Length: 516
Image 1 (cartoon, rainbow, N blue to C red):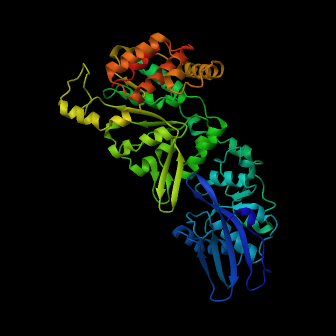
Image 2: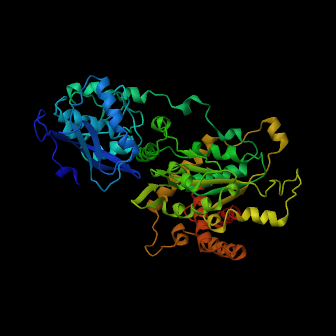
Image 3: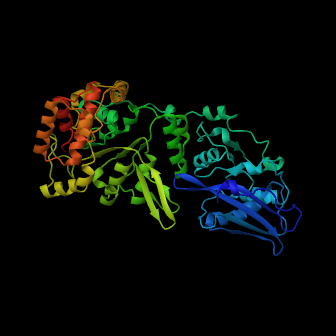
């Protein structure tokens, strides 16, 4: 039912036997909030409280929490039968955020709080037994919905609310603050200074830097290319070669989150119920590294209620899969469509849930089960069949979607002992930013024919580069997707060098990072 068609306010006098009242609230479904109306009616009969409208167990438990909160803060619950309807009835209601709207509607229906301003508010919050208001999962989604519907969000204060929607929040810590009505509640924008002064956990820790990674300049070059063009990357090397160190430092060379991207990140983390304090005070891109035992629902999303998975928590950031062949094949193959669509759709009986998942895939693997294939310092004891079976766990379709494959050898002992350094994160970040700026300039100022729909024409190869690409594709048996992805990488290499046209060297470097 559209909000604009709902009539809010007391339908009868508070001292009548059949006093009624309605307030706004919402329920999180996927990555958005949907409107819900809480209707409270007082009638004769045995004293008690009935909740209808497809509530789950957490919503039904609100009866006990509301009753205790009322008593703790000096309010009274009349000895009447209270019927609470959560409309629309066909939408399943989940979570504990209905506690506060149920209580407000009950107090308004019984005349214990003023009615002024209630119809312009969206109430969301869980109640403690002492009457304090707690935050709930999806608070950012509620704030965005309230902003869109020109409502004020009355809920617990939170540092995770983005600045763009913080002006609609009316923080309430206890239901005792409602005794004088909702019109006197202060805006979160007024107390935003206390939110913004929260120190990010990342700023208290030593900042990661690529300068700590010794003797891996080829791998660093691959990371610069991947960061500049948004390419997927796989590192193959023996244990102890520094693959995890390389991956963990990738967010330090990526551009910071924009305002819009930060809101998207906060929204996903809020819906998932994950702490967003660091994301609220830092613009560094997310970095997620799930264990290889993660389930399919944990990776792509699911469960009851349906929550976003690791690929959505890595939205606008990096998803790092260490020990890639150890992941379940079904989990790995489930990544194929999200990598292409930048969105995951989870279909359930009650509808389809959509979560964004525009992430950058970085993975690491050993060359064989024992990890020492090709390592001159160790002998590999794996049979050819074991090696092929180990590599086959990744799957050809997923490998076809990974743009860069780089071999990471063990660093030389002398360089580690002497502490020799190479490129730092700042130097690599400057290369990435220059490449992205040049790419934006090139797309704006370089005329590309409208008929140039394939990536090779759009990338603007010179004649020698085209001949090289054709020759390498024939020798390495590249498929159509592989050819397109090699052209993407070659275009990124040219952007790093600030060349308008892709040349032979760009194609050769892109092909060198293609074959495992």
